Length: 118
Image (cartoon, rainbow, N blue to C red; front, side):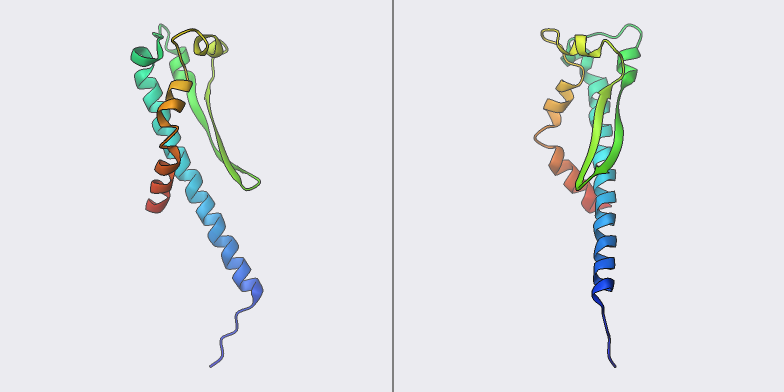
């Protein structure tokens, strides 16, 4: 019995495996971003220095789902209210940077752990 494997088969399977891994990384990254958004919304009043009156700024905090740009998987954390930068840069305040600082050192580890679960 002879088994023939062509270079095209190997490359095709490798591309499928890489694409599946990228999809898993994007899903894992989105789950971590969801956790960051939840953390920000739960801690902005005690740690971020601002109290919400209407809830508009709090409700506008979210992320755009992960997407591929070249070989990089990107996502954007954002606050959708026009005045968010004014709150972010007031002394002793933050809107997004507190969450970024809280998760900065553990973000990659959290994504890697979640990729292995997918």
